[in-house]
Amino acid sequence: MNENNSEQTSPRPIAHWRIILAAILDFLTAFFVIGYGVALVSGDTTDEGFQLNGMPALVLLALIVAYFWIGRKYLGGTLWQRLLKAR
Image (cartoon, rainbow, N blue to C red; front, side):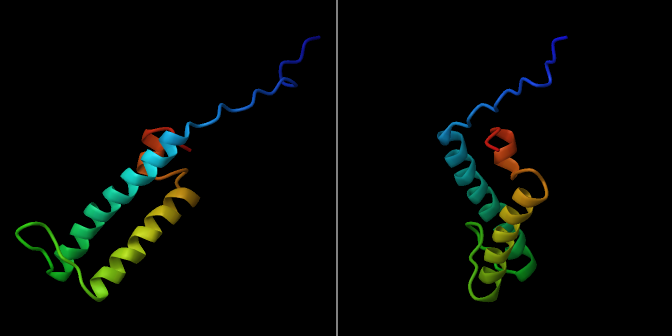
């Protein structure tokens, strides 16, 4: 009897450029989307976009860290990691 279950295929390695590109795009996406959201709540929007200083900037930093941590630990990867299949 031939058992195909005993033959395990190793997963293909992920290209480094995908991992790096996903990290860059994730950071930019998180910075601009979450940053604009924090700016709307804190009232720090400008004509050109937003400008965060003090506590709103620290909130933005904490939310970006949370985005990466939650995405990696609980969601199987961040937005761009999943789109680029870098995870």
